[in-house]
Length: 281
Image 1: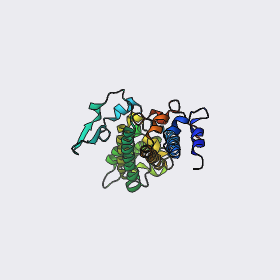
Image 2: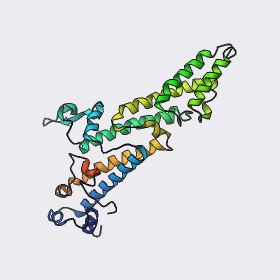
Image 3: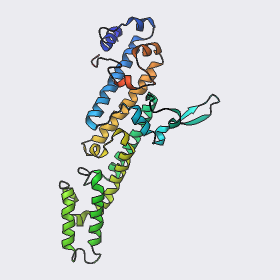
Image 4: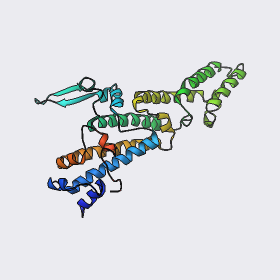
């Protein structure tokens, strides 16, 4: 990097006083790279919010609700005698405590794991899902009812010979629910496939409910072209950037303090009013 001080001024703004940074004797180049990682985190954050409606800059209120998830609530700490102690955040923090970078990373790690399971479920067990483009949480119970009804109307020996009219009515209602899912019709032929596929959507609802605190709309995500893959990539990337910021900070602690980055509160990382950065720096 030819002139890290010039780039640092560009990132922090022309009115920024760089002398306190210079007096620390710490690496200006490393400070620039750290702030660039913050800018990248913000870009990813904004992309995820715009494309998927998920705000990864978790508020203290949302984080408190996420503590219902054991993988986020319980953390392991190493005591002086090197014994591992499990601590419940519910018992050690108040609802107004800021969300730390470590807190956010635990959220990202668990969210990634849950979404990855859904992705694998789709790819391995339901690669040819016929209702996935139109399915919503509110459609699951009616679809289950239609499948059960049509299966009862189907006679082992006679088929729909004596129930054709009733089966036709069920199929009509089912088709009105999923008009564009051509391969799902007629239901009298596809009901075993649909019954199996509904297992996937029950899993999606379960995951969506688990992450209600961040308003996860998983059905909308799996209906986007390559949606779940893109979301996973961005969650992984923002997690990597956060760890990079932490890693780099060990050599420039004074510059980190001067910049306004606080590992005990994620808000300056995402709020330009608290840490003003030029995204083109």
